[in-house]
Amino acid sequence: MPLRGEIPLNDGDRIRIGNQEIVFTKVVVPRRPGRPTGSLRHCQKCQTPYVAEAPQCPNCGYAPGAEDTLSGAPRPGNLDREAWSLQMQMELLERALTLGRTSDADRVMGRMAIAIDERLAQGMTVDPPKLLPTLVGAVRLAAAQGEAQWLRWALGLLSKAECPPSRELAEAVGRVPPIVLEGCESIHEVVASLDPSKLDEPARAALAVLVEIAAKVGAKRSES
Image 1 (cartoon, rainbow, N blue to C red):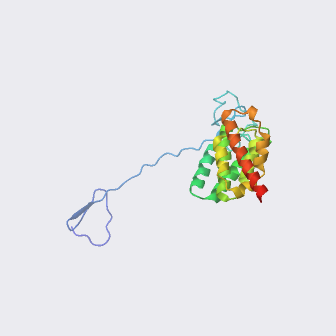
Image 2: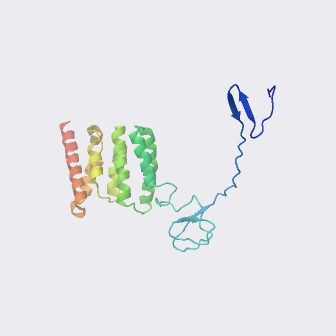
Image 3: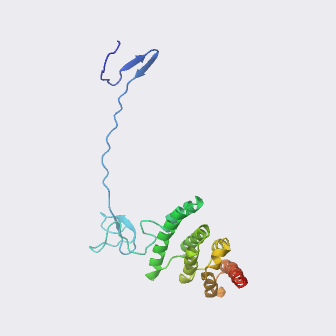
């Protein structure tokens, strides 16, 4: 029948407009029960995160006491158990550098540098396989910015953390603009502080590249 005015529709009603017929269907979205947000506790002994309601750490069996804290307060300096990891920050840094967003890369690098510096200040260590990609990222950022700030930090940390250089790091330093290298004394300090006899073959090869770069920088300064 022809319709006039406003008429409420029910599920299954059919509306014909010319040769077209429209079927009205009422969709009911079932309500989902609320999911309670759980809390995490970091084990005071091994720093493994686990559900706060558990009576003890599932990893080492440590039973928490009143001094233990809940989610958001892991022991300072533990890069592996922090809310973010070096790997995640490296991915952000890589994305920012690839897109040419040096300001974003600088902010990410700043967070990474603070975490690493605090860890070393507490007498803790960072494994070279985790540290070296960060240093390479810092050198790449210095090259992109045309400034020596992150180059100094990376090379200085190489000595402070007693981290053997890698081929990737040496190659990244080699791609830094000469004018930036000339304003960075750290490369000479690194070359002087590393003992080739204590390095494995890949690290010695990387050091040889750094020695060559340092020599070129020194020669350039002498010319000027």
